[in-house]
Length: 381
Image (cartoon, rainbow, N blue to C red; front, side):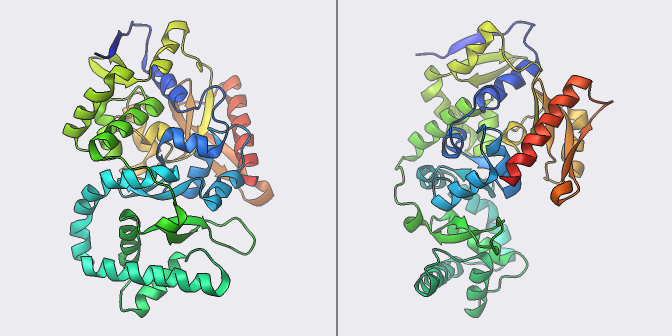
């Protein structure tokens, strides 16, 4: 059965397309009931910076607190690992293994040159696997600790003659995680305060139930879930996001397009769920919405082409010098209109807007301040 195809009228603008994405991502309306629900819907949420990832989830789970996200990591109902693009993501535990089966081979090929520079061989990785598992077992026997910190693994590697300097150690740990031997588990103890690091734990001990999907079936599911949670999006957006080769992505699209809607916008085919597309009939909500999203949020990062929501002339204000570090963004009515920053610390912690042009209007300023208060309450909770 062919996909439903929608030709958009001139009334549909890039801002409307942006608001459709906000809706798909649970950023308009009621959001999700729990942290695991939000993460499972998004399939994989960029989480290289943990503080940003906490707020990314918080924006999608009304009434939640940072402690709820940390609690989900502690309980294993959400996991954090390197499933794609060599960067950390939050995922539902049952999804990690089958996604790694799809993505890890290509990622290993991409880092092969760097591993040669670091003198990392397959034998080194196998040795470090054995060292890591023995280290965790020993710590567990002493104080019932379920895993090891990065520093404890580095120390064990060094004692066995495996150099960890110059990023060699983190590449070794990453390789163990990408092969589903280790995964990041509960938060590490930091003297009674919320920690910024997690313990590394044996994959099979932490994730007892994993889905089993073949490559073709898995890519089709990954594409469908990406479009459902990120649409409107193109097949090239998905191929960039997942690092699935474009030929395989297009084949997967052909197998799931009967469950999706195709939008022809500006001569390009965008895909989205029927539920999101139905909003076009009654008017897409959120025209007056203002969101203070974290750096690296999927709303901006999750697409190869970000020009629908971020004007190209402002791109370097979000990613200065194209250094890969995304600043926090303000999104008004589906458009990225500026960045925002934290000021002060402790009880004096606050937030300030940094609009791209001019100043925020009174109503937008009030909405931003409400978002700032929500952020501060969330992070303190």
